[in-house]
Each structure stands twice: as structure tokens, then as C-alpha cells.
Image (cartoon, rainbow, N blue to C red; front, top):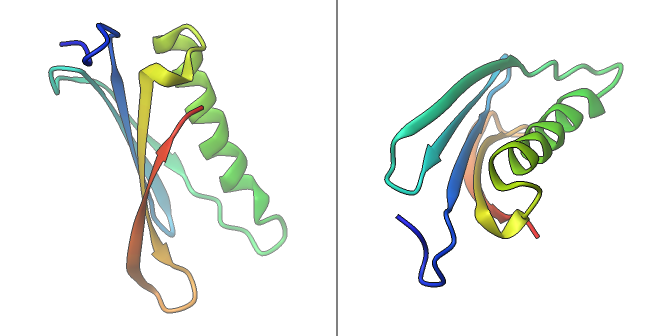
Length: 96
């Protein structure tokens, strides 16, 4: 299935947890293309490690599936509120 403009779309869901980050890629029909589980590595010594992994994952999927065209990949991210230890909100990000 394509969007209204005839563009093949992909969807990336990311769940950032304290220990693991899970990701799933769906095609426009909702079929799972790929699932991945990464160590979150939320380290007090270098808190940027997990952020780099997430940005790298988004960029690699944009390049691989959408030939670098960020308008073809939609991304949803869920993460706990690190201060309170509970999920307070989730974000929807749109590449591009």
C-alpha cells in the first residue's frame, strides 16, 4: 500500500527501555519486515551512547528501506520518564 501520493511507506517503532531497546519495522501493509533488540547502554559515564544507537538505527533504516528519502519512513518512539521511572508520554517522529 502506498500513501495518497503513491509513495511506498515504511514504519519504524522504537521502545527504549532501561536495559534493552526494541525496534520493529513494518511495511505499508503492516507486515513485520524486521525486529531488532539492542542493549540500551544508559551509562552514567557516557549517556550519549544509546542516543547515538537510536539515531543510527533511524538513519540506517531510512537509507536501506527508503533510499535515503526520509519522507518514506515514519517513526514512533516510546521511552520511560527517566526521572520518575514510569512512562509518561511517547513521541511520534517524522524523518525529514
